[in-house]
Length: 170
Image (cartoon, rainbow, N blue to C red; front, side, top):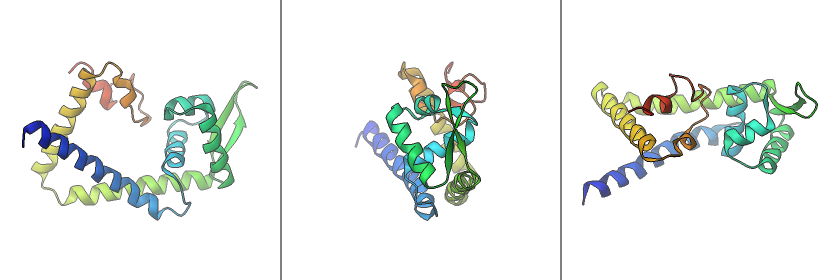
């Protein structure tokens, strides 16, 4: 097997591991959330008072899809819409239940990754970090639209602590 084939296979495997680390806490969630709903809650948590338009852009979904996600989150009592600073704007807000749910999910997700990383040696963790940083740097160099890789983590791609920002000059 050629190295490219092995690397592609390992990347697929890594993505599957990541998907399991995301799916397992989602399955244990008490709110019966879809991944889209969870991503919306996370985005609202990290971007307080965001407009529905910025939520749509942040999640890379259409305005009608954003409306549907917000409808479902409102029915579950996890988010509400409110008038923004301008009458034409509608902002998304988390309810206390929504905030608790997304924070619990993020903790469960971190616990899943922490448990996985705990069985690795420090050297293995360092190697994994270096490999993932190299992959991220290569993607940023290779793809003109690298900003689409953004995880909407809340740090903002204009800041030096954004992981993708770090790799722009690599």
